[in-house]
Length: 89
Length: 115
Image (cartoon, rainbow over all chains, first blue to last red; front, side, top):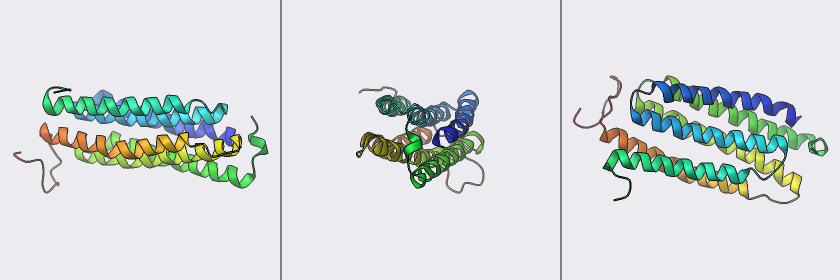
């Protein structure tokens, strides 16, 4: 029963990813684009975890953890660049 | 796949977590797409997406804990990391938006300083 529900859940997350890409395309300021990228990373983590459950592998959580780490570091680096004009002072 | 051996109640709980998380994350993305100014848009995904992905990860934790016959702590690790880092990145983005003096919507009482 889980295997029949997961495609619908993935569809809901894909609609969310499309809305994030829309905001990433039209975002009036660069901070909107950073926020859209951050939300996109979070939705991608959920999609990877759902693929992990669907294939019942149990090894894709490492990819999800890496994407979470890289998303956080990227967001902090971009906002730090906007705030200071430099990433590492 | 041996999810057919799983008890029905556990399956229902996992499905409830997954569908609830997906709906909450979709509400966050809709808020990101169609709210008016940046300070409102920041409000949507930082709360909703964190709760949505948290629900998905709890479902994954229940599923793999049953399947592997033990407590799988890796998903709890991702959840902990997301819950710690999401407010930090939202705070940094709000600071960057205030630094760039982004325009807020007219009904907002106290906007960014020097506007």
